[in-house]
Length: 273
Ligand SMILES: NC(=O)c1ccc[n+]([C@@H]2O[C@H](COP(=O)([O-])OP(=O)(O)OC[C@H]3O[C@@H](n4cnc5c(N)ncnc54)[C@H](OP(=O)(O)O)[C@@H]3O)[C@@H](O)[C@H]2O)c1
Image (tube, rainbow, N blue to C red; front, side):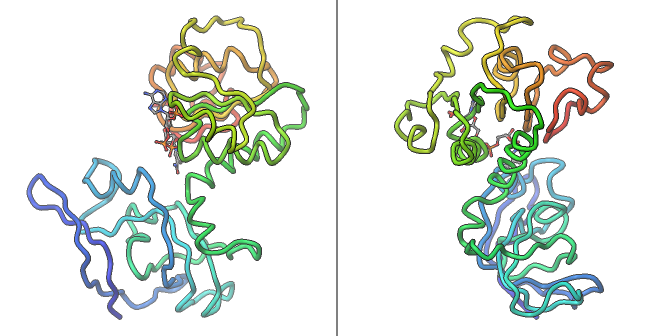
């Protein structure tokens, strides 16, 4: 079976993508083939499309780390032809051809049914960034300790930050949004109740015993922003840290936090190294 996809090829030192016809291998045991309706655009897709080291296992390759679509063929009893589904993460768009093609073939255990109250387009409008924000917000929601203070979100206009602001507001939290953009109105409309200018926030250095004024935080920026944010979160609060963390050694004692940071950060999506 042939399908069209955005195939990225390596030519010498350059990587370039074109729409090409690709052959879909016969379905393997345990797999499903999905007819792709939508895939979100993630920074990792840009890395995969530009040949960044360590993202894609080999080229030529079709990027796209998530998909929403319809089951075309299934070897799994969990899914039948015509089922509407979502898949995100695992090796999709990294070592398995991803969502920037008309079809994907992936293990059925990477796939979840599309929720009844969501369209395929809506699911990929949130995309993997939205799912990541959801994972952070869930950690805050699951916290058994209720602390009556606002939640702080950094990188608030970004993919993860903006969805986190919106979800937290919908769940009834008071959200303070740190941003470097002059987009006050947009963030207020998204659900922030207070906008904190990034430069002002970083204007005074972090002190180990800053006054705790936040019950929890979602940091999508790292570095000094994270450092400062941590000093202002209640000792029993939830700290969600995503992506790059320059100089983690400045903030974390590995003996106190565990090698992977898991004892300190309830939700570390990324890598301390
Ligand atoms: N997207 C995902 O699926 C995903 C999954 C797991 C982990 N992550 C990690 O989460 C982090 C955020 O991802 P994202 O997709 O939300 O990225 P993004 O859409 O690029 O948003 C990042 C935000 O950070 C702020 N920012 C940019 N440059 C900055 C600077 N120099 N100093 C301080 N703030 C700066 C900006 O927001 P303001 O202008 O409003 O401050 C920007 O919108 C990344 O480290 C990523 O690796 C992302």
